[in-house]
Amino acid sequence: MKLHGRDDDIKLLRRKLRELAKKKDGDEDAAANKHVGEMIFVSGTSGVGKSALIHKGLGNHAAKIGYIIAFGKFNDRLLSPLSAFSDAITCLAKHIDIAVEDKKIATLIRNKIQNEFDREDVEQLRRVLPGCTELLGGRRSSLFCPPSKADEVTHYSRGGSDSKLGDTNRWVSLTLAGKESISRMHYAVRRLLKIICSHLKGVVVLFIDDLQWGDTATLDLLKSIVLDGDIPSLLIIGAYREDEVPDHHPLAFHIRELEQMNVSITKIRIDSLSVDYAIPLVAGALGMDDDDSK
Image 1 (cartoon, rainbow, N blue to C red):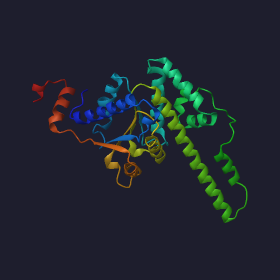
Image 2 (cartoon, helix red, strand yellow; image 1 turned 45 degrees about the vertical axis):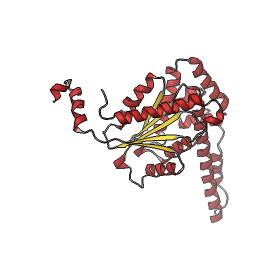
Image 3 (cartoon, rainbow, N blue to C red; image 1 turned 30 degrees about the vertical axis):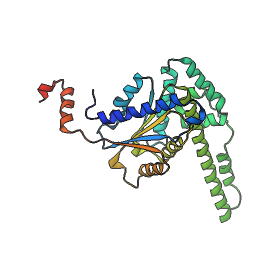
Image 4 (cartoon, one colour; image 1 turned 120 degrees about the vertical axis):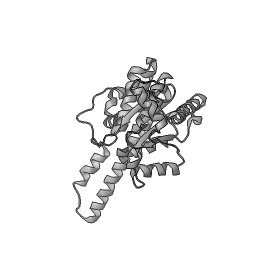
């Protein structure tokens, strides 16, 4: 079904694709590829057509010209950290395995991944992106893998002095171990995206839907990705229900923070269709022509 009343928004989205594609085609040396990323946020109330705008207005167009759009969607009934991001990367991995016409490129991407990451990084990526096992190498995780630094710190925290100073030191150690693990995970995901985006044709779009239900781990990871100047031709689009994102919402805070960091933020607000656009929409759904609808 045709989208009605969204022509300007569709033109804006497609222009962003063309601009990123030109940057990729025009950058001949690695240094020229470095740039602060950009994000597009699509907002509006429930059912107004945010997802349809991306799927039909951008997704179909991108598929025709060989670009890739990978989708992930948060669910208010399944509040699992990083779930929508994981689904989007799984979608991207399946595209590489199935839809990439040049199988040499798919093989090259897999070989680059195998050469880039050590076993600990691969294990961490598998935990964050369980649907990408095949892309990451297909080796089964060991049931007796060596303990991570976080595990070692946790083990240490069970022993030692019971003094307040000891408790404070153990709490600080646990916090640092957690931050180190998150930082390493962010770095691994960014390196993975750099390999993929560097070898695929055109632009890669990650579309994360229903960000109003997103967790802070996802928001932090998206910020880490968009601030990385080494990932070429990656466009991140997020959609959310504006009536569920007040000023104190974590998503609203992250958007303001990205703007302060000079990230290019494009905001598209979707309103309900006016009567002039609603009439042909209903007429089309009922199989009526323009004369009958009037």
